[in-house]
Length: 155
Image 1 (tube, one colour):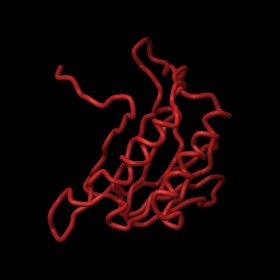
Image 2 (cartoon, rainbow, N blue to C red):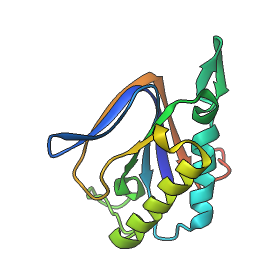
Image 3 (tube, rainbow, N blue to C red):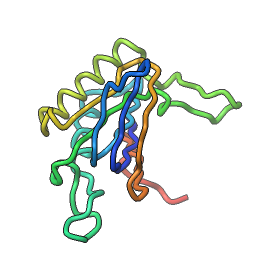
Image 4 (tube, helix red, strand yellow):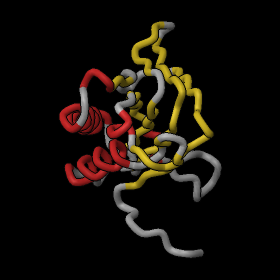
């Protein structure tokens, strides 16, 4: 499971000219589910998203996570995060989870996120829809998360 998280001053998702989710200060999470993702990946990602310290506390940088700061989260399903561009110029999405199991796992992810935090502070887009995601990145602060890559080897 892969995610790109961005610290935002505001973010929204629009589908068919209608805003379906929006937040003020918090995190925008783009989440891509892989064919071999399991509940362990969901648990890892929920914990990491809620607790990664990207917010300031009384002028000290990197002190609070979104949960500690009491801020909002906008989640957007994005299978393209599983894309590979190693061979040729056309992205290969074979590692992305198929639609029906991905929808079920994305729903599970949102439910666990809400249970571990505050459901009223979590918004999402529309699974499988063509979305316009409007992100006002704060910093900019953008991090990549991968539930399967726990160490980063030197090049």
